[in-house]
Length: 132
Image (cartoon, rainbow, N blue to C red; front, side):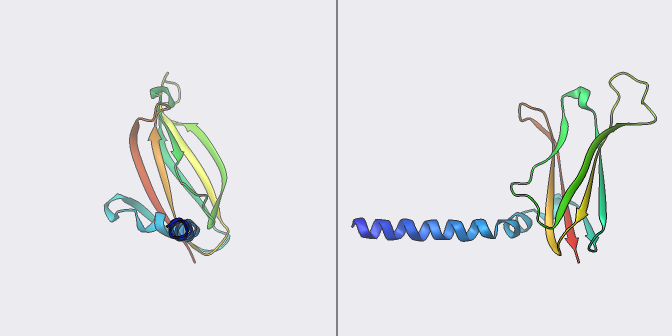
């Protein structure tokens, strides 16, 4: 009985390892089509700039919520900039701006969350990045 239990555990552990090796594909496949905001098709050595409206004075901020680091692109920079139209107003919003560079052919989903530190989520954005 004990040997059987050990064999079952080994099989489940092996399946877990196999699934985790292919987890990037799982992340891509699990995004419902109605939640996908945009698809970007890029070539090697291209850069991508993503701007999301943000107002840190509300307690919310954008963050990337990928469970695994994308191996298709790498983050070059992140900055928050004030909106030029309202830059002199107290508590005015602006933009969170990320810049990415392609590093490998393939596909990845970037999942952005607009959330507070207590975990309350206000918005989500999903972007599919295809590098050819």
